[in-house]
Each structure stands twice: as structure tokens, then as C-alpha cells.
Image 1 (cartoon, helix red, strand yellow):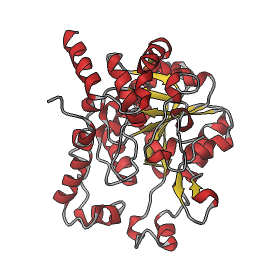
Image 2 (cartoon, rainbow, N blue to C red):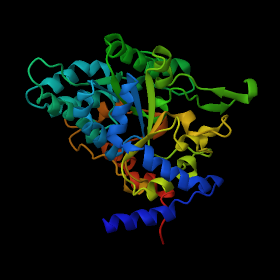
Image 3 (spheres, one colour):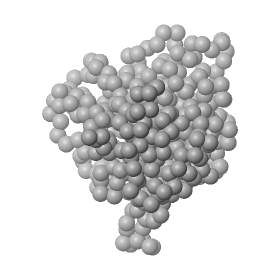
Image 4 (cartoon, rainbow, N blue to C red):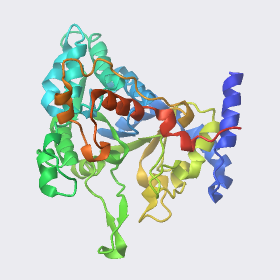
Length: 381
């Protein structure tokens, strides 16, 4: 206990925001002491007034997936019987449905289902969400509806890729249409049309619902153009008042490409004073929602406030404690390199990958979360 208090005191000294908002830190801390809930309770509470809760993550963080997996029993008790996963292809939905209802967990089937969607995603904790659903379903009485994991995406054809600025090339890759529109159709079919509820785990931008990120465009009024095709936005138009966006604590995009701390580090400073316990809090009426942000999200949104970006915030751990997902060392078993290479995603981002060893090195590097966040974790020396 004393060690944790010492770490929290050190963290409070590391995350001292330079902005004038720091003067309001005491007020913020007192409000979070009063209004925040344990992280799991906060997420569950959102379903009292919403059918769709989008949880925006920074991909590949172990604690995030462990948290989502741990929610399965409580979600079911709250009447939520589905988790929607960005990393999964609709073409493999029957296989996932069979896996969560099987008497014996089929590890290879789940592995192959994820491989079929993305040969760049050998991360065990994403498979473990399916395992958590399977384990919970084994506890249900006969005849009870099972908990399901819904694949939100489809299988892209990266073999057809030529260049990203060519619409015809991208139409061949994304041959079932814009990805977020497709995902919205899946959610509408599997959830809204059935009168059910769903927790969706997606990358942070896909979770935006009311917020419209802006970008400079000299041909647009006010020289700003606003994005309107993210998954949360599409769902909000289908189900007004029934969608909530929650953002997990993570770096936010910077204006120059390097990520930054949200609200200038004030959230981190407040959490440090609260002992860095996992918690969640709303941004609508809590003073946290009034915090201003000057990250890349504030482009075309001068004076951006956190409550504009999301409905709620979930803090699981300080950035220095977050770790990457574990690697599934058997992910490529039975697949020759030529087959894997032909399906490598985003070839213009990854560059030339000439061997399986080189690809493994790239995949391991991605989940080196301490290195990913190193520029935001100030040394105490």
C-alpha cells in the first residue's frame, strides 16, 4: 500500500500540466472522488440509457482486452449479450458462434478466424475475448441464450492493392464497401433489429459519435472539413439517443504527428492524486468534461472540450503501467510465407516485408507499448 502511494506521488509530480487548467486540478480531483465509479460499474451503467456503447481503444494494449473479457458475466446479467469486435470478419461469424457454444474450446478455430481477417493480428488477448464468452456460456443453464462475440468487419483483399490515392484500387481492396458503413449494417442487423444491446470494442476514431473530427480544407466554408463516416456517427444517426461513446485512457493524436496527453496531461495528474485506481466517469456534467484540449483533435475545434469528444472516460492504468498484448506463437502454423505475404495488410504503411522473420519483428514491435508511449512518460530522474 505504501509503495503504491509512493508511486502515485511520483506520478503526480511527473504529470504537471503547463496550462492554466492546472489551477482547477483540486476541483477536478474532488469531483472525480465524488462522481467516478469503478471502471466495470461505469461501463455497465451506460446501458441503463443506451443500447450501444462504443469503447474506443488504442490497439494492442493488454489491460484493455483483459478488462473487456472480465466484463462478460456482468454484461449478461445487465441484459447485454453481445460484444462487437473490430478485429473479426463476418465471413467467420458462424465459426465464432460455434466456438462460444462448443463443449470444448476450439483454440485453433478461433485462431484461424482471426488469421482470416488480418494476418497482422497474432495477439492472444483478442482471441481471449472469445474464450471468455465460451467459459461463461458453459455456466449457463440449458436453453439460456448464449453470450456472443460479433465480428464487425469483413475480409479485405489486400492482394488487389495498388495505391491508396486510387479509388478503383481501394474499391477492390474494400470490395464490400466503406468499412464503417459495413460495420454499422452488422450492428443494425445483429443488435438494433433484434431489440438487443451491444458493447463495441473499436479503435478510438471509430467510436466517435457526436464528435466530428476536422481537417483544414481551403475549399470548405471556414476552411474546415468535418468527418462524418465513423462507426459511432453512423450508429447515432440510426439510433438517436441510444448510443454512448466511452474513451479509454490513451495518448491522443498530436498536431504534428506525435501523440500527446489528453487535456494537456490534466487527466493524468488527477488520476495520480486519486491513486491511479481503475475508474470511469461521465463527461456531460462532471468538470472533467469542461477540460480543454489542444491535441490534433482540436483542429477546426478551437477551445475543444473533452465532453465534445465523448460521453465518458475510462481509466484502467497509467500509461507507464500499460503493456502490449501477448503474441500467439502458433498464429502462422500451416500457412506458408507466400500465402501470408499475399495478404499483408496496409502494404504502403508497412513497406517491403521480405520474410516471415521480418514480419514477426514488425508484429512484436507494434505491441511494445512502453516504447510506443515512451515520449509521454517523463523520467523521474
